[in-house]
Length: 190
Image (cartoon, rainbow, N blue to C red):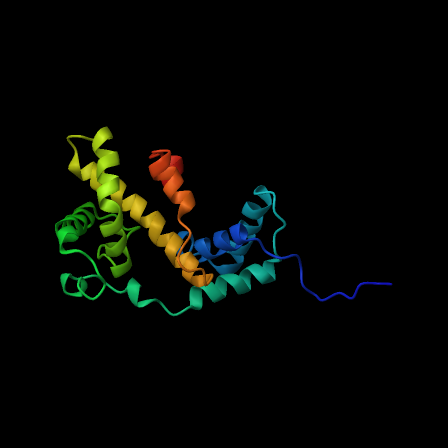
């Protein structure tokens, strides 16, 4: 007896789904869908997984890119701190971060912080400060740069989780890399 074909390929693992969404909304948001789909097929196969078809990848990329932005991705200001439970104690750090971004002219990151970033800065600042103070005891700007990179990883993970309807975001891999293993290498950060 022959099995009836449903026209559907194998299930896409959560790890592959996270990669697709992450690339679509962050790393390659300006790359055309087809080019990104081809790149993703290669990355997925290198992971040892079966890649979805180019058509499926393009559909998933479109779905991720076309979602309405969350209110957490609006610009942060001191005035929204109370509404989003952002401690006033972190405000000086957030202002220094905005100043650092403005001075550096670093175009990859927008200069203005989002509410989501501000929340992650507030959560992660104490532990990252302790971790980076060991490596950069006399360089507060370098500590702030590392904090920003780590916050970006958590922000990205949270955004992907939202698009996958996973709440709360599973940050255990990031937690393990940055804080358990104390890995601040470029491989871990990027």
